[in-house]
Amino acid sequence: MALAHARAWHAEHGHLAAPRDIRHDGYPLGWWLFSQRNRAKDRARRGLPPSPHLAELAAIDPWWNPPWNAEWHRNYHHARGHVEAGHPFDPAALIPSPSTALGSWITRTCLDYHRLHPEQQHLLTLIGITSEVAHARTRRAHPWRTAVEHARTFAKTHGHLAVPRDTTQDGFPLGQWLNRQLYRMKTK
Image (cartoon, rainbow, N blue to C red; front, top):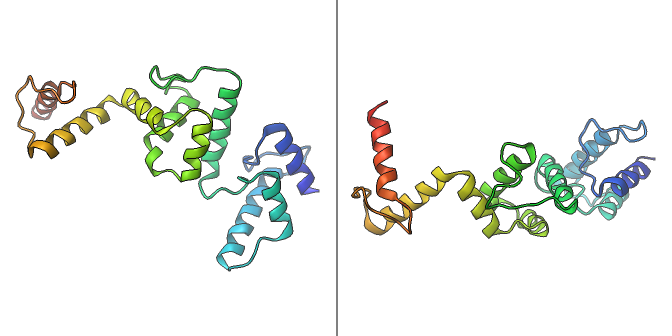
């Protein structure tokens, strides 16, 4: 009975990353999937093979029990649905906006791109978020992070950050930025 609900949920939503509080036709599918994930982890810890119904869940959705956070996976499917619905995704223009839940997740994911599991990176590539796109999004979303990257590069090359005000690093006004940071520290 539970597997039938899982199949129906997957057919409707394209994944089994259902939140715990989801009920499908009255059945507590979210809680059941949560308990199955815990059961799968317990069996793996004890060196046991997956039980037949766990293998059947994997046949329904290979990512029913990903090695990363289920919340990340739900957000990924939300982003995928957004892209598949034909909504624009433009990292340079920060669309969707970081002020929206989806835009905030995309920005956080882009910030953590290099720490993600390779399969997460692959899934992101399927919706247009490559390493280059992630980098472009974080540069636009977090200009302070970009400034720090330029400062690190300059310091690594020159061994210091005592730069004249008109110094640039790859076109970035590093001297002006550092001068502002020093001024802010002195006025606190």
